[in-house]
Amino acid sequence: MSRGKRVPTGTSLKIYLTLLSSSEPLGVREIQHRVGLKSPSTAKYHLDRLRSYGLVKQLPDGRYVAVKSGNPLTSIYLFFRASPIPRLLPITLAFTSFMITYELLNGRDYVLIIALIAFSAYVIIEALNLKSLIKYLTE
Image (cartoon, rainbow, N blue to C red):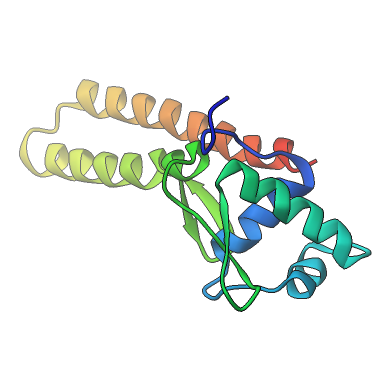
């Protein structure tokens, strides 16, 4: 795989998600405590792996920040606070709300409304499957 195209798993992914959800750069010990690692050397090992993937950048003061561009995870998820949300979810909810409101106000075509609800339910289920992917990858 080319540099910047790798997706971390396990502890490395937990550290990457921690950095993505942080509003400020974090040091090795801060990462160690937030992720629940026993030693700073373990955190440093995973940070070095993430740096080699091009997913983390070390600042001159020694703290780390997540690199968001060029990563497949950041292209399919939005990060709200500490939680990854599949991009499909808010888009689908907004589209469905708009279309159902439009149909109820204008046409009351119940077949179309049922089709919209079915389509939206399918996309929401797929979005939740993407959310469970993060849980799977961090185990």
